[in-house]
Amino acid sequence: MAIHLTKESRVLVQGMTGGQGMQHTRRMLASGTRVVGGVNPRKAGRTADFDGQAVPVFGSVADGVRSTGADVTVVFVPPAFAKAAVTEAVDARVPLAVVITEGIPVHDTVAFTAYARRNGTRIIGPNCPGLISPGQSNAGIIPADIAKPGAVGLVSKSGTLTYQLMHELRDTGFSTCVGIGGDPVVGTSHIDCLSAFQDDPDTELIVLIGEIGGDAEERAAAYIRDHVTKPVVGYIAGFTAPEGRTMGHAGAIVSGSTGTARAKQQALEAAGVRVGRTPTETARLAAATLRAG
Image (cartoon, rainbow, N blue to C red; front, side, top):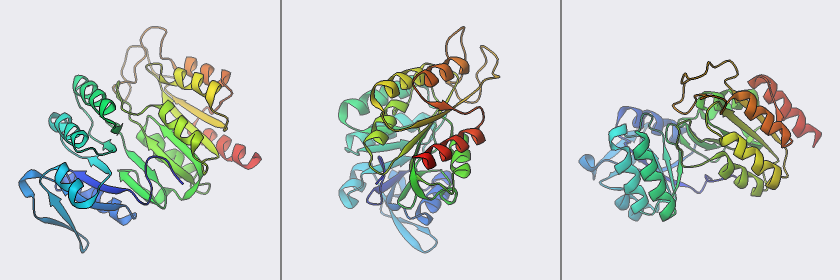
């Protein structure tokens, strides 16, 4: 089993005919994802060729859903058009929208995540690598060749740290890896994924990757303490980040005494989470904990 994305998922790609959309649609198809169509109003009725596989292009998300039964959309559109693209997906009643685009204005993200929440669409992202259930489906830009199916559930703010932990634990394997994104506002939180992994019978251990800025990790720690019975291993990026300077992600900034890596580590450890000092140590802790049963 997996969370949010399975071998049965039927995926549309908004912006499929652009450069990034073509590149990553090809990779998704190669990893076994059921990509059933793309969306581009200017190219409706055409097909796009991916190594001999023709994928239809629809004029709207609603047309794509009616024709294919799609239940996931991956958004590869420029920041200025992202709000409209996500709103279109929500209006088409797509249950899951994976928003890869970075640089979306925060007020746009606030608007479309709230709209999606009211109407029953889950947003992954924005500014994220997407999610992968190895051996089943891959929606986004996560490399499919660095993981195999297994019992670890991974939730991470950082795309590159997602890739590193997947590589470090490549022989252990994953149920699902979710990159939730590092913007100040995201559609799916650590807590959302913790809850789903807790309920997933095939996930035996959870790895949580956080970073400086905000209080998401502290809130996740409180949730783990009260609701999660499976072992959790964590890593926090940004111990050496200077105060007041954005580090990588728009949300990764320490302001005053809040949002520090040390505070997040302490909160997680107080909730029983084993926190690694480096990604490699985190992977070793996860593998050892899983072996110990």
